[in-house]
Length: 333
Image (cartoon, rainbow, N blue to C red):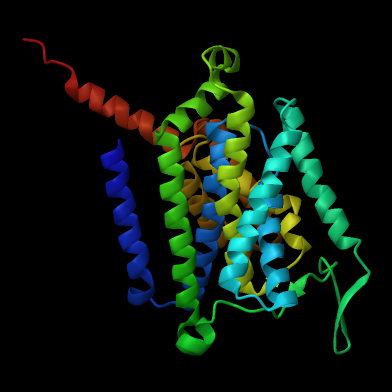
């Protein structure tokens, strides 16, 4: 399985590296950059939701913390975006540990409700922030950006280094490196003893704890581990778009990313990547249909849940197993 995953990963990475040079379509490069960012978020969310079995909805709050801290340090203190991203990721880890501590005594839907409430509380604090924190000429900036959010802060510097025509390629490779590192990290966790402990707590918590697996330790660990790359993804989002606002807390975006896991296969290592690719492709295909776009995405999700309850990757694994088993059956004399 490790050899198979390595071959698939190297092939996909080679294709991703070649795309900007073979196609060079600016719109495609921008959409793929966004795909890499969302795929990173969903891959890390899958560690918490799919592998560890914790029904957390705080991932978009973690993403927002990474994006906002990156923007704030760059705008207020003039910190390089590269350093601000790392600071944002570290702050995100600290915030995720606090969320994990709050969820220790809760199970199932109660974890989902609490983490969603935390996310909405941060959203309310941001949009109700009207106090002037800093004046830049005639422009007043709130500490959290308020309803308008942040804009005009430093980017990755590719506009100056590569010029107007090629700067999106620089951002493209930053997002690709982020996804690659996030995937390597996620696969390493899933295949390691830590991943086995996560799955043990997910499948039979009582038996796992009786065997010496500490729920306190591993729940905090999975929150912290997934938060680092989620925070970095928020930083890359901020550096790419140079805009961060309350819209990243929207319920529609939250549902969209959860659907990526469900369509791809919850708990499957390749599920988030496949789900993100399919849903973003479906969304792009329905772009011309205006108001029917969300309806079409909803139909795709419903059909996936009904026809492929284990996700696309789960169905492919099942069919592959059946095919290999049928070939191994001995032929009667």
